[in-house]
Length: 364
Image (cartoon, rainbow, N blue to C red; front, side, top):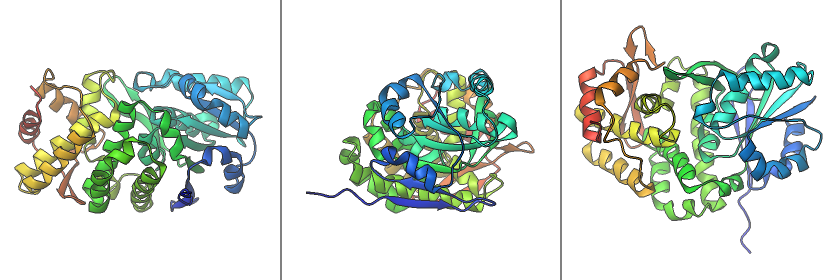
């Protein structure tokens, strides 16, 4: 009999209160004990979505039987202030006070919305993230960035609000549709492309086992991705410098989501295109070898087809990219990969460069 991998703990060393990311197959069943171990006392209020609750609600309720449940719609189309207001309404009606903690059970959007509600209700209560999608497990559940979209741009309304605890169970991604799972893998590729040649190569070697949702293949990939993000967040919690590396592929990715009204692309798919655009900018500047760009393109293609972009205008993309929240004093801070596993941040990418890169990727 093959034993499962032992559970792992990654500490996110942010002042004044570092927190743990607990990673292990079967952790959902241990959620109450993990909350107790992290000192998350008081009242616990679960925030989830109808679909996630249908899939995992019985398991969550078995470990937190007395916790009230608030269900809000999920998906980018519902990542707005109205969803946050629904959580406020339920909390007020249930007379939830500052000693309580929200437990967000769901994907990236659910985590962002419940986290923003926690950051702003009564000027801040605790949030615990239990991410149920691969993308949320490797990225959005860690680091404290919470918020909602504005019609003119993604994540323009938000806050920094670090969780008390993150609980990751690789078994939860078994219920994901293949497209949703694949979207999370693009975020893993992001970490490999900017920070770890080993992770990049591991994904390439493990594609078949990853798509089988094999926990022994998933856990090392999740743990290394979380470790990279935890290290970056500890050094730059508020995205004043080093944390910008996490935005590799996100400038064009966020623009792509915005111009299609968040209806056409999964976030990871948009980041996949964004990485291809950034790679083209890097090659055009002689900062990235064409062979490394080709390796990135090949890996993204192996993970599966991306939705078509052939009908989308380059000019509209450039305008949307200039609205990005990474524009500071009129200058866009843009992350380039300079080799597989290495990166640089520049602030002098021109609109001409962006337009040329977008066309090479396939925009009209």
